Length: 103
Image (cartoon, rainbow, N blue to C red; front, side, top):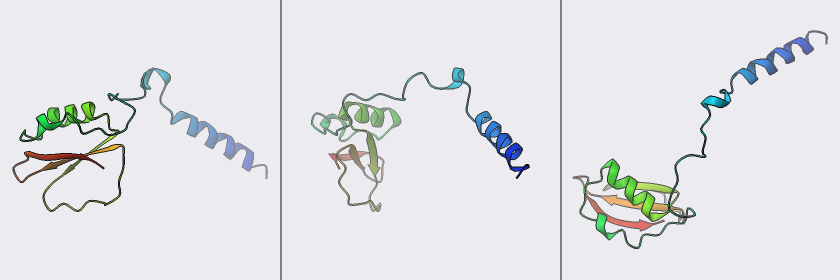
């Protein structure tokens, strides 16, 4: 019983040491999107026919207002669940965007 107390105290100190100092923690909650996280695919037709580059995908994600972005390649297995906070970007074998929808 006497040995438990010092061991627990040491464990508590070790766990506290795992947290980064306040100066290293992000000032904001992370990246921001243009909306409340609900996907809106209207107005994204400009991206069809474009290469699915990081810049293009980032712009699609921001303009859609979605919380998540999911690129879908030909033949790729995907879940069939509908998520109102997810934008799907369909790409062909050449990494060119062929369609965009929510879900």
